[in-house]
Length: 147
Image 1 (cartoon, helix red, strand yellow):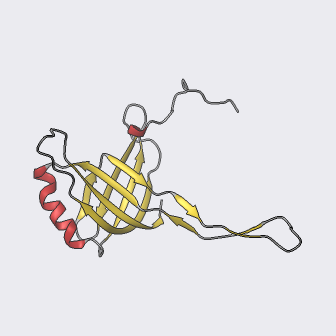
Image 2 (spheres, one colour):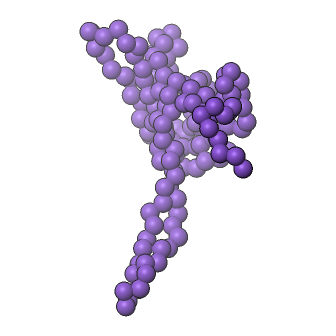
Image 3 (spheres, one colour):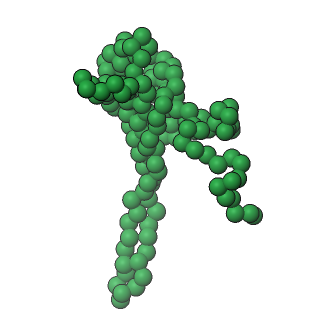
C-alpha cells in the first residue's frame, strides 16, 4: 500500500466535518461550527508477578469522553433556544452527529453518532471592547457511540 502524502486527494481538514445535535423534548438544534471530545480511553490495570516477572495488563472497559459543540450565537435563532436548553440541562438526553464532508463540502460516507445527556449550556463571553462573534457551547456527557 502506498504511503499517503500531503498531495493525496482526500486528506481531511478540520473544516471537513459537520457537527449537529438534537435534544429530547426540544428537537433538532441544527449545525454547529466546532466539535471536540469523544475520545475513547480505558484505564488499564497492570500487575507485576513475584520474582520480578514482566508486567501483565488486564482488560478494561472503555470510556467515551464528553463532547462539546459550539457555534456563533444568532439572536433570532439561539436566544430562546439557549433558555430552553438551560431548563433541561442535566435531565434531557441528546444525540450529537459528526458528518464527514469531501473537499467541496458534500456529504462523504456515514456520520458518527453519539448519545448522551446535556450537561452544560455556556452562553459565551461578553466584552465591550471586542467585535468578535459571540459563541455559545453545549456539553454532553456521552453514554454510547451508536453509529
